[in-house]
Image (cartoon, rainbow, N blue to C red; front, side):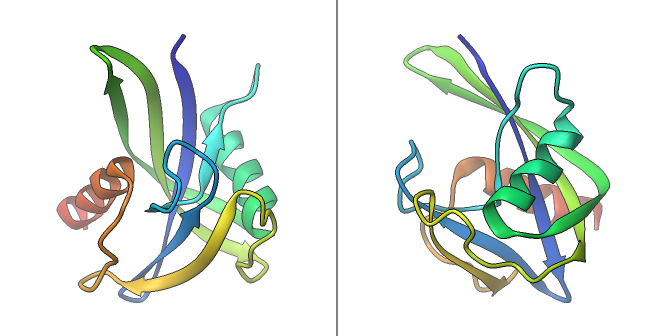
Length: 130
């Protein structure tokens, strides 16, 4: 069964907001916030809900970046949709400590070593399309 998920890339000046995941297939990886799509939920609504749940912020969708296709064990296991988003209310903080170890902004040219592959793809999208 294929997992559908979506998440948001938050850019502030020349920095990107990343979370350090806990207890998922990307445990201890830095990634953009986001999560699984619920039944009858749009990808955009998933982004807004997940960022509200994970970081206690409200966001506005700016644009879709791309879809990341996660192939493991010879098959497609996930399709993750990335969006550039803008914070319209709140200050990012860990709102789900059972899922998130840390949250912080990183200079786009000085990122941590262990970043989820879908987040790397979305960072490439942002660099490419400006």
